[in-house]
Amino acid sequence: MDSKTCLQCGKILKPNRRGVFCGRRCVWRAWHQRSIARGYEAQNLPLAMPPPNSEPILPAMGPERLRAANQLALIARAPADARGYRVGIQPGHQQLMRWFPPARFRAPAMFLLDPFEGPAVPTQGTYAVVYLDGHCLPLGGPRFTLAVEQIDRRLVLTDGDRTFKPRPRGEGGPDPWCVSPRYQRGVVIESVPRSKACRMSSHLSRWSAGPIPCGTT
Image (cartoon, rainbow, N blue to C red; front, side, top):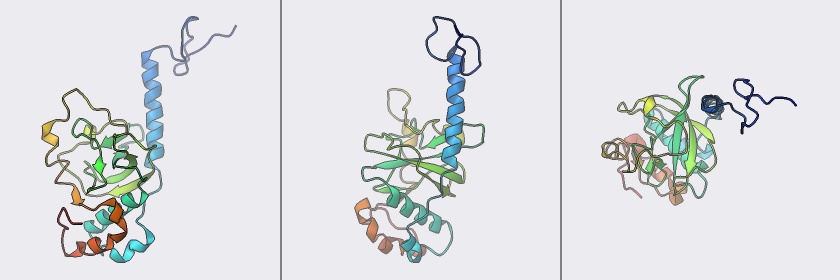
């Protein structure tokens, strides 16, 4: 009878050993390797673009153009039951992805689609996007990537969660320190109902003249 070996290290398993790994260390190492591989796949998803007919209404240049393009792309690609989204980045080929907003900093741990909130991230780069429903459950996995240039200097990469499914830490809810300016007023671009996305040209055309006041409908 052939002996069973650990799928991670190749060590011969005890005859009465259940499962395919010899111990917790190999279970963790296997999870770590799978997570890195999935992060690499997510990081290389296609870059989202705004709808083709949005070019005339986008600001001509500057950071406002990218923010407006990302807003249009996120709203246009969102599933019907999506309430918000999270963004993740893999800082290195051998590192785990980090997802924002962090669950320990905000509840629910997602940037809202209505009213729309732009992503608050610690570094510029290409971020994978996953949508979440009203219960903060992921609607599938990462779908596409976004180029994000605007950063929040109060954040660091290690603040991010290691999975895109929010897992709050502790029982007392989010830290009050981060439910205020970091993830609320500082990232709201405009309060635009998703049902009115088809009329966003009337809002976005004013971006070149200055920021749109929150609460515009």
